[in-house]
Image 1 (cartoon, rainbow, N blue to C red):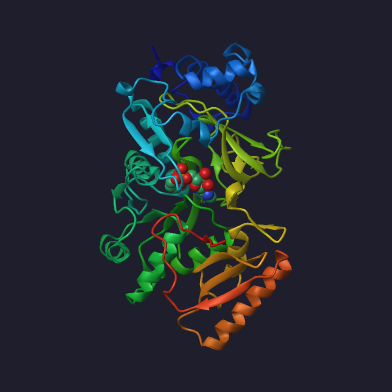
Image 2 (spheres, rainbow, N blue to C red):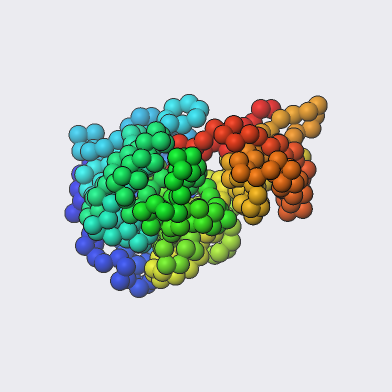
Length: 435
Ligand code: DLL
């Protein structure tokens, strides 16, 4: 009989941004102890895994003891589909979200009323860090529905005191019209979708730089600093990075400050981050590249212990929020890595090179094929609509050479006509594996 209610979470009313690193550490420990006990007592899967590992909630005496706990993976969520990892009865659940999942069962997560309030609080905090203010209008083009992006941003913006335009994803021509007519101050969507909106503006004869938008809150997919520069140049706004995942909460697990633009700060009063070696599961050195792992510290309906995100990054000291650690902008996931004739590469490495050549468009996809026993990679990229073909062909050759030099592998670069490739409406599918 689960018994958790909001007031059992330690120190619900502190001011997290005023904490020292040391005070934050003791808050995290109290909350970690609460979370581990809550998970053990109310989720059979956690109880079984902790028992098998020979660890009991009472063994968690220091923050570093977290490393004795077993990892949680997507497979655990699938195994307990749909509600087996909920730690409260479904009668206490206020919202359910699910990931579409490309294969097999979707992963399902739940929130109590208190969880939803804390989530909105963290998104409001994140929007504040992005420079969004009460009284502003936010055009929210993240998808509404089972995906956490739309509703997650929505609640946080309302709590902050902004007016939300709940546009959702898609219907790009309509997005352009409403941005012109409603004059929002900020927009939230995936970076690839903002590029699609900018294209659609230009098609309508609107200069994207002349729009009312001052801030873009971009995330839900990997993107590079080169992409940020391209977006900021084309739309004349501040583009900031919002990170999150549904298993851990949704958008707002970590947020970049518009003042520093140096990677998202993890809201460590609610989430304990680790970086591990994906192969051995051991912690990597502070600041080294590793797989990001999260333990929730305040979640009631869906506490999550040492969840392996598969996202690769480094944990760095805080800057804009000194007590909270920062992650380096996430540019790849373990499962996005392409192995091409022995060379490992991430789609964002190609993005970086594409964005560095002004005469190329940012619209490209990667196609993997097999010729005989050899794997081949083709970069299909749209040519620039306003430039002569010869200039575009020269740019494609430069790209091919830079990929060879910087990544160390030969690829084909194929120019496509403007508009030939699918446009993003949310998370963009960059890789097509045709092998
Ligand atoms: O994408 C939550 C979200 C919505 C985040 C809106 C930001 C804005 P999922 O659908 O569960 O949740 O996908 C989570 O997306 O593990 C990363 O691989 C990737 N991801 C999310 N944010 C970023 C980001 C939402 N800022 C997965 N940079 C994560 C890079 C990101 N990758």
